[in-house]
Image (cartoon, rainbow, N blue to C red; front, side, top):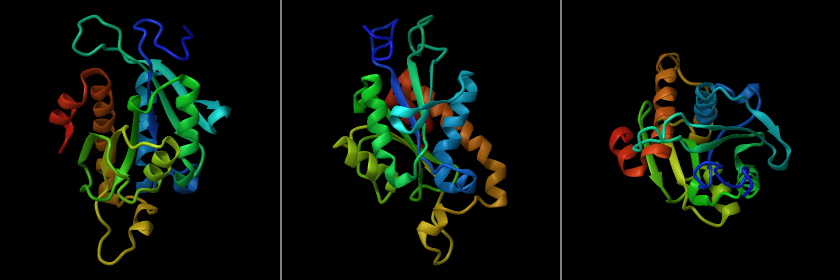
Length: 209
């Protein structure tokens, strides 16, 4: 069995964790790019750098989580962390290409994205659902033909006053938010690791604000 298609130790498919965002320095500090920030934190913890993945127009990094969760001494699951190098509304194509390359079904996909309907510094982990107007989720659902994948919804809050939500997500965090953002990103990375090792129910109990 090819290691790229299945976990060499457990025989299970790897997990694919994709951080949603827009590429390039002009977008780096935007609220819409919090998925990239969480993916970067996961990579920092795993100690494996991103590498170009031409088949999917993405950067990917493969590693194994240190813990197997509820089984003492068990190896953690293998995970492929993905940072697409395309704009948010085109992200479905690279997502589908990565899943195909690694032989992974949509139910082992975790999409990390910003969420307007949650206050800043809160988050929700869920399985399935609609796109709620999020262009990245809409693109993924259209490409995969299903919405049955995991989502880590990282709250950014609603825009103040009458500001257009589209402008709000493509704007930088406030100075006060920037002070708290590293803690939010760290906790979001914890939630991803919990989901992959402990499952949905326990992760929701621990992290759904």
